[in-house]
View 1 (cartoon, helix red, strand yellow):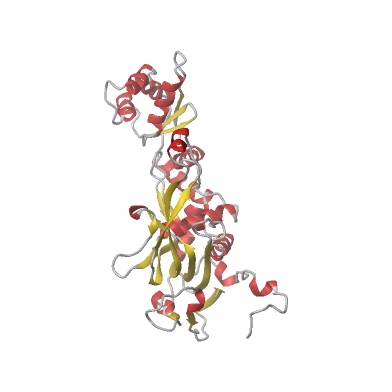
View 2: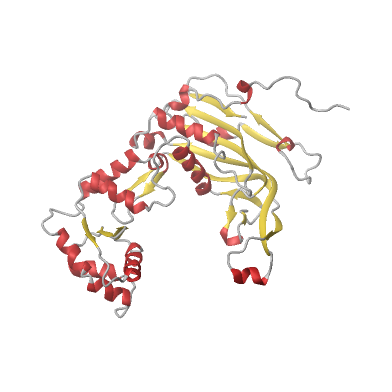
Length: 388
């Protein structure tokens, strides 16, 4: 009988992340990327339309992890690991970032500060919450910024009213504050609120300031309009190699939020969905012309690949504890438009089951064999194996 026992210390060089080679740092090259990741006893991407059960496509039952889910993990790493500023981040409204960019670009904005009347703090809160829900306004504390294109009081009042009925207490309170007139007055004497030149400059500022806008692009037309920008890094939904079989588990909850719920029962029943094991295959494309347009640098490229290798590092949770990057393969083209079809390059990576029968369900990464074909020496495409 033999057992797997480590007789020698493991060398860090054998398990550490790979250093990023110089060819991957070139933003003027096209890069095509294929990656493999797996999940063990977890839910890689819940479907809100299916009570958060793992996503599947409806024909063959293969698992799906959306592009938005994968980009979210990358964005978190770009911000937390790389220290870069991102447009999308927790607890900060997007319109605030756009407003800052417009101001930095020289835009003139109408701003007023609302005051509590007769000590009616709750009424002011209701007003601010309503205004904050409207497209043409940004609320910061008690300060209201009008971001619309129309400067007349009638247009501002219409935007302020939104869907409120005329006899609404909130609309009556807004009218008593004479907010429309005050915003109109704040715009008087100014050359313009936000010109086309300012919007274009604000778009450039957003691309310069936020890494995720440079990488993935963004629609920045909410609130103040800073345009939209396409990103050079495009990720498509990942699909499992084999069909997945989600498992439902009943769980109990002992913590109660109210005395009434505690009086009803000591425990409550919940549910959790998980996959015992699945291996997924995903693809990423780097578009060099868009990268050049967005000002991508070698440092941006380094952070991209380092974040790809560590994609699941910040994502550990009870429902996603064991998600790992198993393969990361990149083909770098000399031409910014590509030197070979991406699908022919991706076909070089073959994933095969090595279980005893075709009907047996893979239960671990060892139940698969990854074969990576070699690319004959050439001066146009460089193949890099970062993981696997």
